[in-house]
Every structure is written in C-alpha cells, then in structure tokens.
Length: 328
Image 1: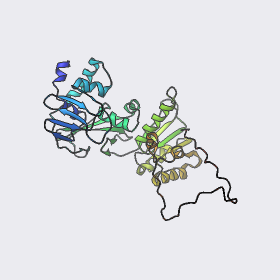
Image 2: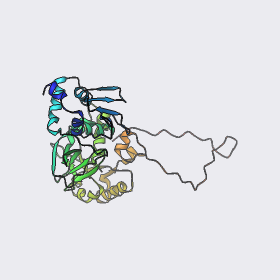
Image 3: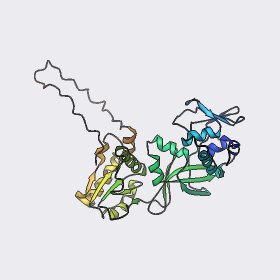
Image 4: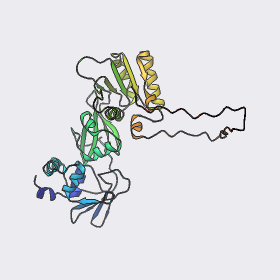
C-alpha cells in the first residue's frame, strides 16, 4: 500500500474496523471517545468532508497517516502503511447508530480468532495497566461481524478450546467454559499460582515484569486460572500435582471460600496470598491503585481522641507503617 491509497481510506471506516464507533454526529463531523487515550466525553472529531481528524484533548490531528503514527507510536512510514494495509480487509462502509455496541458473541454468523493487534484493545489493556507485550503473548483477539459491523474482544484460551472474552463494554466467554492451565516447558514444576480471572493473571505478570524487568522469573512456576470460581471443582485434580499452591484470588467472600475449599483438599500445601494486595479487591485493582471502599457503621458514636490532660491514658503512638512491597 502506498500513501495515496492509504489517504483514500475514509477515516470513519478505518476507525470502525478498529472497533471505534462515533458517539454523536454534528453536521459533517463525527465525534468519538478518543482512541488515543481514556475519556468519557467525546473530544475526538472526524470531518467527513475533508477526511481529517482532530483530538481536542491532545491538540493533535491530521490524516490517516498521522492517526496511525499516534495509534502505533511510530514515525516509520513503511511500517505504518503495513499496519494500515493489514487492517484494510476489515474496512467496510461505516454505519452509525450512536450507542455503545457491546460485543455479543451468541448468534454471530462469523467469528475469527487472530493474533491480538487491535489498537482499541491495546488502549483498554493500557487503561487497566496491563503490559501489552505480555498480553500479546498470552491472549488472542476475537473478531466477529454482526449485520456488517465488526466487534473486537481480547480472547484468553481455556483448556477445552473455549475463550474468556473481554473488551471495554463486555465480559463473557465462548463455549466450552473451562479452566486454563499454563504448564512450563521442561521438568514438572513443584509450585502453581492460582488466579480467579485472566486479568488477575496478566496483572501478576505485569507486576513481576515491573519489579524485576531483567529477571522476572515468570517461568519458574505453573499457573492455573479458574476463569470463574464456579470452575473450582475442575481445578482440584490438576492442583494435586503440586507441592506448593499459592492462591491469588479476590478479596471477597467468593474468593475466600474458594481458598478454604482448596485448603481443605491440600492442607499445608496451600498458601493464601491475598494479603499481598489487602485493601484491594483483586490484583488488577492493586496494579491500578484502586482501593476497596470500606463501609462505615453510622450507628456507632465516633471515638473520642485521647488527650494529654488524661493521666490514665497512655500517650498515643503513631501507627506502624505497613509494607507495600509485593513479595512472594
């Protein structure tokens, strides 16, 4: 593909092929939530007559080449033309309904599983603080077409040929539902790390990579992802092969119950590692710095502070600092 051919592609059609749909139309302009950053109010405009875009939040704009430069973070024109050419088979005339279109895999006439490459999905992963190179290694991309419209989702394979699927608007799976068991090559491992969902698994890999970029030790243990606590019974048998089982499940009732069941089966071989991200619902919330909101009992009177005038009270000591390290 040459530059002239690329510039003749309608931006609205190209954005739709990447999974971006306009939120509203004003005259000859389409408004999108920016594909280049996270936002809730649309500030990314495409002028249909001039076939140009402008992102008011970034103060940048231009033609399809300039958009590809931002999407793929490169100024290498041949490389950008290759990326646009790869996407061209999915470019179709855009149709607009101006409502969020969640992925609905059931009843879709056509589904493809391809390498993870959609900038829309990369932007979603970056919003969740996930290392995209790790995600490309562990996940695929599901593409489906319904009534001529493309839909995209991250696809995480399970042990039975099904996929856990996720995008910004949808969370689900394709049949059959099952666990995912990641076994390392070479000698059988003595340790297995257990996660509730694949976002927790990707979060763990990302954290390890951040903390020890040179030696993250990602392959010194196996991994088992439940893909739902409802799959716990399917995980108990393969976990019997391990001397050490570390559980990184959610800090909620379902996660704690699942750990108790695994402990009842394998006793002292099981370690509950959720204390490493206490105060957070799960590993991804820990990675994103999103803390649990603790409820306050409004029926209890507030505690009175101790004063220096009360000789019967010991001097209040400052609280000890909690370790924030992610140790395993």
